[in-house]
Amino acid sequence: MPELWAGMDAGKAEHHCVVIDTDGQRKLSRRVANDETTLLKLIDDVLALSDGEPVSWAIDLNAGGAALMIALLTDNERQVLYIPGRTVHHVSGSYRGDGKTDAKDAFVIADQARMRRDLQPMHRGDDIAVDLRILTARRLDLAADRTRVINRMRAQMLEYFPALERAFEYKTSKASLVLLTGYQTPAALRRIGKNRLAAWLKNRKVRNSQLVATIAVQAAEAQHTAVAGERLAAAVVAKLAREVTALDDEIAQTDALIEGRFHDHPHAEVILSMPGLGPVLGAEFIAHTGGDVSVFGSPDRLAGVAGLAPVPKDSGRISGNMRRPRRYCRRLMRVFYMSAQVAAQHCPASKAFYERKRAEKKTHKQAVIALARRRLNVLWALLRDGRLFESSPPPRAASLG
Image (cartoon, rainbow, N blue to C red; front, side):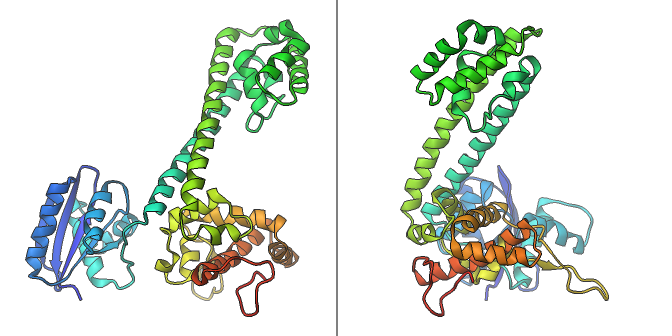
């Protein structure tokens, strides 16, 4: 059992460290810069205080500004416990004094590490899992940027050319984006005409160019009024359409990087054998589990982290109430929810389970969440045993039935 506990209140430029002993007495309180030399000096000083006895470190961030400190500790096989900042905030109220300082937060972190036995130690990140976390986070940002740009483009079109704005589904139609890079106003579309526009689109490798040209010219024929600011608005729309195209290209490149890195992981084949899990969702699963589900201890614990395990909401004589947890990994929830929706359509076992839940008067969302929870158990068993998913599992194996 450790003799000293070191609590780190992590920040971007600086951290505050407080070290306490078994009686909760402070042995060190120091603010340190977030650079390697200073942090190594802090670690050496804390180890000198321990006289060779083990030291348990605890920190309130698991990424960002704390990444360097965590790497320095885990690379040297020091025990590091993670205490979320929300937990520190709530528990601080039970400590003396209403003030909030970095020193007090660091003391709370160290003291909680000293008293609690339910905290999980952090491990050095799996290199592939870390890469996939970076890539999937980038892809999420790109997808959000794409949605934002499309919404701005449509809002701009609505102000001067509403007929063309509603003529295409710009989120899915690449042809409409190509069209907007060249022609954005009713007058320009009427001037070029349907046949020449179709040829222009065909030269840019647009499929169904004749149909796209017909729809666009019909929209132009429906409006002969030039709205004030049309010229500048059309230029903005053309620029936004090019931005969406560039984002599509970058998303495709990122997907290729994700798929390539995902296939390097030893669990990739097992994950892909599960219906509904492709390279992108599989990569997100690895990214947010660290590549090793055994660190969660059980599928129930993983389900709790993913928000798939309901929690009780009882009070007085009222019991048996269950609700969704408020704190969980939404990206992990998305992995299981999205894959369950796909599996409910294409996997016979998943479809039968989903339909059974609907027959029990469950809503679509409730049935999909129930299926996602069951599939989590199956995936856990497959990863534990190192075997692939089978539509008709062998006797006594985990199943969706």
